[in-house]
Image (cartoon, rainbow, N blue to C red; front, side, top):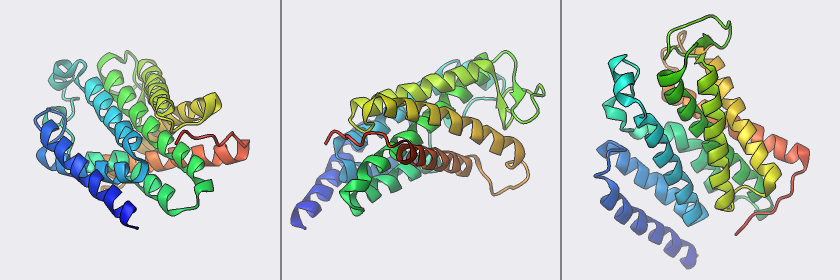
Length: 252
């Protein structure tokens, strides 16, 4: 018990120090950095440095792609608000599912850990896929279509997709899956393929939700849709992991 408390106290101290050093970077709002510190503590306390590094990698890559062509997107009214800085709602919309699965890996029997980590990886792969697809599609998408009707719509329309954006989503998902593999959170090449494909699938499902539901319900915000997307990705990945009987090797 004492060892567990010391581990969580260390996670809190380390994240407090790192956030204090990083908060000048133009990635998050002041409140966003506070919530990022809470998230980082949860992930470090649950999964150790690799859990923390996974979300840092997502944040860095997501912020990088958001800045691509930012002036052009801003001129057309398509850029992210606050100069691309993320707030608390963005932090939890992207990472709440992953945080719950990370905590669950510490509370449930060890046999459940591999499947929970695949869900964790898929949730972030889906979110990075969404960010890559949205940001690159808005800037370089030539023909933007509504996913449900394939009718041409302006870039930035909820539920809109483009060939360029979809290809970028696949790249983002594969990149996040690769990073998860390097961190020992995705077992085997088949696990990498599963996480990559589920990340892309969940992004397409998110577009369907945006096209069919988001304009009908005011409470269905972008952050809530992000949370739904990451949850869907995690559930699909975990179900497929179990149904396919993939190897459960996980690097400690």
